[in-house]
Image (cartoon, rainbow, N blue to C red; front, side):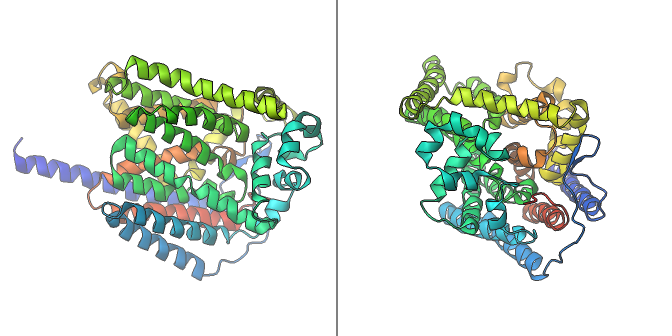
Length: 465
């Protein structure tokens, strides 16, 4: 093949990818129309759970979407250029912009942040935090838990402790709602670092940074603490990658402590350990770790976790494992009490997640998996020698399959799987970043996500106080 033919082939491939992005965005707009016309169910009537549509639709001030698209365009078109030369300044400026964009989009929902924070029907952590101190919550947890409102009973106490931390800064429920949005948005920073370390592509990392802020399901559920959960698992993964890169044992100790805090807050993201294993397999294939490094990776986080477990047990008589078992048992019993069958939710959860993660994002992932299957015979037999991109996508597919077929969550997955939706932004970012002059295409994808969020927030009652 001569140079001209090779160039033509590459241009054709890039043109095909651009066409795919446009098609995926069009599919996203179609999904928006289904929500607009009330022909899409977030949940399942057959499965005994559905997020209801509002009977009365509140109008959207025209200035909100105009300002959102303007700020989004400025951040993407300027940031995607400056990220290569002024990385920290670009991230700081973009962070401020995405916080503001999220608040603008969330402002469309007819219920205020403060009203939701105070509501025991929507989230009961605030009321419990107002009654007890952190020491009382931990030391008397076994005696108090059954007297807590519904959500506080069925969740780990870390969410109560977070609101008790907020009390140091403010007692205002509205300001606490803003703090939840701010804290949740910090997850974009470790996601940027993860992409940068895994794929050495600043543009893809910046795209992932922006997509994180625009995940529809995150925007649907501010100020619920499910929107904060991704921060903890992303920090764990980032510490994991820093160790692989630099072999500094301090980060393994921090990883063990971070895993304890993650479980104390929300244990569901532990299933993403499959992604950790995939990255470890790639590190083994590239000979980044010696046997000694592997040993340290297995032993030190475990010792740090046990140290945290012992510390909380001695100081507060708090048994994390016992509380975890109680929460898991409660979740299983809840499905039986509410008559939420297993099989119906396999498909219904997947359908709802398809919208919540962002339709173009999910379609890019499906396309990547399809390409992987088509090239299966050409891939090396031993997965240890696969590229990081392919290992990550395969690991994510396995994680998604595990979450779906475990069947612990039956309904409400737009809220419960926000932590998982975050990881789907990575393959999408990589795919788009590899297309030359992809900024316009990326803007179209993000605009589709914004549209998905705005229409759904206006019409669907995701959080009813």
